[in-house]
Each structure stands twice: as structure tokens, then as C-alpha cells.
Length: 72
Image 1 (cartoon, one colour):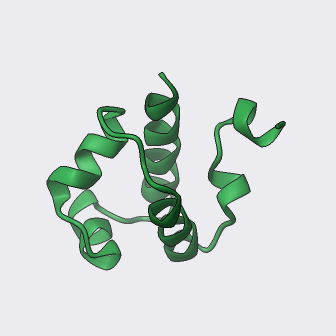
Image 2 (image 1 turned 90 degrees about the vertical axis):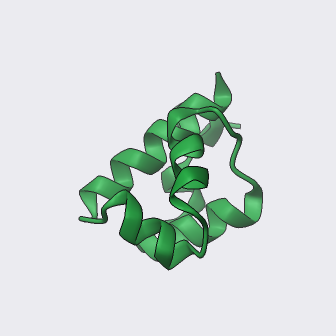
């Protein structure tokens, strides 16, 4: 469940910033299949992956965090 929330947020911000899944995966240095698994919630993103995602999207990890996570 938690992985799904992170995945939806990553996908939403990626699209908002105009990245395709392919171009974003390339920028992050991961395969499209790994990014797809994370965005679908099949794989929990690691902390260093979240940091790279936030950096590439010019946001903070806190911005990226699902609302419940950011209240902790």
C-alpha cells in the first residue's frame, strides 16, 4: 500500500514536469521497467532513489512524500 502511494506521487510529479517514463528513467540511471514497477506500486523506492527523483524534479523529498508520510 505504501509503495503504491509513493509510486502515484512519483508518476504525478514526473508528468507534471513533462518527463516521459523513458526519459525520466534515463535521467535517473535506471531501466524503464524498474521505474514502471515503482510507479505501479510493485516496488518500494529506496531512500537514495527518492532523493535522486526529488533532485531531478527540483522538489524536496518532503514534497514527494505521500501526505500521511509528511506528517510524521
